[in-house]
Length: 243
View 1 (cartoon, rainbow, N blue to C red):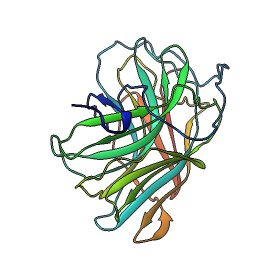
View 2 (tube, rainbow, N blue to C red; view 1 turned 30 degrees about the vertical axis):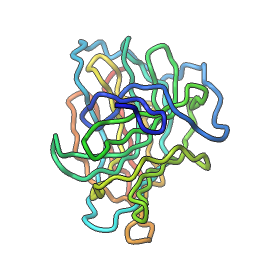
View 3 (spheres, one colour; view 1 turned 45 degrees about the horizontal axis):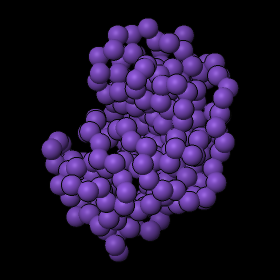
View 4 (cartoon, rainbow, N blue to C red; view 1 turned 180 degrees about the vertical axis):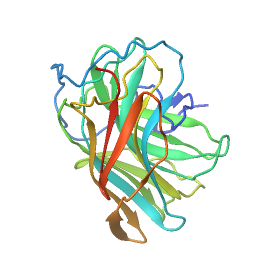
């Protein structure tokens, strides 16, 4: 099957954070960060190859159109070869194999390389991945990541600050849940953030029936090795136990 819009077909994880570096993005973003902030720490855990998510969710059964937040880019220890990231996502609330989702994230690969990526599942449940290897999030930046559902064209649009990423083709599924979270693909990688330099979600909002409202989510992915602290209706922190 040929990937639509030049994308890369990916494997399906717990929340859809896969690996791929194809695609198109318009407009300048942050330069590559080379610094190593103290947020990076080796957790010294075994490589189990499993996906872990830590974040918060909101349920809106009708007219859920957008989710957006400023998400801090933190330097993260990544097992080789693997990746981690933090994202905003809209999804249909179903269980596999019926689940469908769309998201935009900052992602860090082993080797200290960082990119912005969009991902979505098509009507058949196949996951597609779009990145641009020439655009690099800077450590310490707080990009505004927005995932938008367009009901008129039944497609998803993606934004980093004022930069627009390619939209998805039309899909038949409708989002009823929003999620803002961080993710790893092995226990050996660090969940973004430490107790002294947390992964921070701010200005977290939803568009419901044309109106922007506070995210006001609930914690739904506890892990024994990481934490989420809900600070208020629009802010939360994630961090790993490693030190």
